[in-house]
Length: 217
Ligand SMILES: C[S@@+](CC[C@H](N)C(=O)[O-])C[C@H]1O[C@@H](n2cnc3c(N)ncnc32)[C@H](O)[C@@H]1O
Image 1 (cartoon, rainbow, N blue to C red):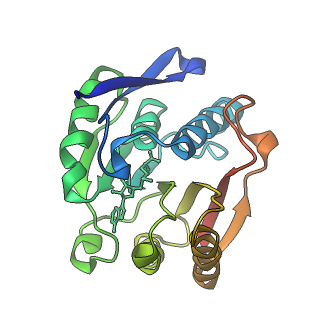
Image 2: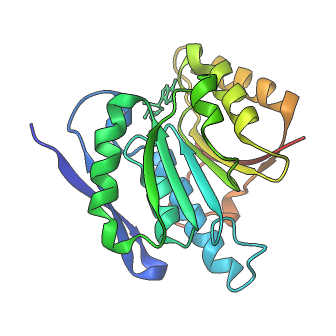
């Protein structure tokens, strides 16, 4: 089966993020619902902030996305006014991320780069300048990479960096325990703020998908 193109609409600026997806493969090959909810929250935030640069989470900011998969959220940030975006994932996703950068080239408002970043890899982490914003969609998923994800976030952030993280609450298997552990680990280093449903996009929000904003203590 061949790849297909999925479009996530940014209605306030009358454009789409166009994303190639694989029909099958590892979890990073498709756009996850938590990525769409985070993308649409960023759009609402951008609209509500208007010309108040301080309130806008994305405009003029340097952005680093972890576990980008198709790159949906990072590419949307680049379309919505970020000053520089880096989308990252395991090396097997570099080709897909680069294809999606190319697909959106004429809509991007800033440079966007796809890079390998394997959570917990100290050498790789050191190569990234501290960003203003880190985006993470649906990455509380893997037992073995829970601690590396938290330590990577800690090392990539200064106290001024905002982490915007979305995830889908799952009730099967060890997922509830993983999610609980993730928040316990994050709370050692970060303050958290939950983004209320009312602050999110009125259609693209869901009781089971949560968005948190973290800042390093
Ligand atoms: C459920 S997918 C979410 C993809 C995308 N953020 C979205 O929401 O559409 C989780 C992503 O985390 C990436 N990932 C898993 N373990 C990783 C690791 N150790 N280092 C970097 N990325 C990892 C996967 O390759 C995958 O793209």
